[in-house]
Length: 187
Image (cartoon, rainbow, N blue to C red; front, side, top):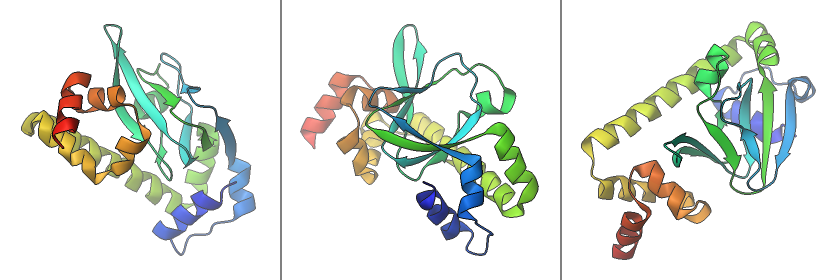
């Protein structure tokens, strides 16, 4: 169950104490069908998630419209940070966009790992720093790039085009579906 997660952790922390049986006492495997909700709007997020296989879409609603914030693909470790950290209601919904297998850890088990292993603290801090850097890049792209440039940046991530719906991609980069179609046709 946790082989892929352990492999990812060992890449980052080759000297870390990683016991598969111990980790499996803290993590739970969960299967999601396509379109199944992992986290609903206005619920409290109490888990961190690792995408073992499949893909998830994270979105919010504004004036009845869905806006994609990001996608989580294989080997991605994440949570809805504001809800998780503050134990507040989530402003986001997380839904499987294909058959998906996740490994999740609840907050109390996360606290055990954090207390027990210094490398786990380092991992979590590094993960949150990377998330902040990515968010900064996204903000900068919306402030300084045209929609065309944001679209072209997506070519660095071909799986976005292969595994997501056009309407979800368009809301993620801040353009209409029709504008995205025009940009795609020009390519």
